Image (cartoon, rainbow, N blue to C red; front, side, top):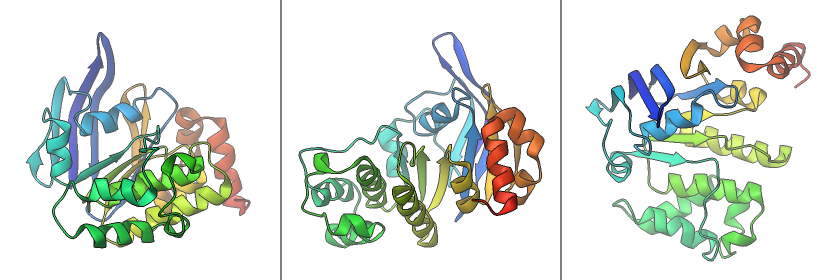
Length: 246
């Protein structure tokens, strides 16, 4: 579905992405892992056209999209949920979702109801102003709003950062429901336990390059990769997972 081939990107003179090769297959959840500053968010921004690639190719559903404007890429069926939880604070939950649903053809009312159904906590707050929601609820809203556009592929950037375990569980459920209803997902996530629960394939980034790729089982069987490129904390998470502690 999505293929990146030798993608490079710069911020001024800084060479941030240095030949990225990455693929997301239809109906799969793929996770992009790496330390802070590795280039994960830049990868998502480059896919969406927010950052223009300086070299390489990006194709989506068989069509080249690199270098195209973000709104054109989105119209092809790509949705991006950035890490900064941008909601329209003065609008209600339902109004936030309606705005997104109207951007693509189809019955808006049905899309609003379906998008809300991914997160039951939002359904009870449909008439509540988005600015009064908790951080976790706002994150649910940004994902629900993306889903209202009926995308084929969703790019999720750190959706559980700073959230309580209860909210993390709700986001996890929403991610799985999204996949089960037909959306493919490229997930950037620091919560190692969550990532290994939901994703089927993993790409590990370090200093702007992909240094490892494999299935969930491959990654869990490679503690040296986790320790070197993701940190001691992730290695401890792996040990806890293997002992049944998480």
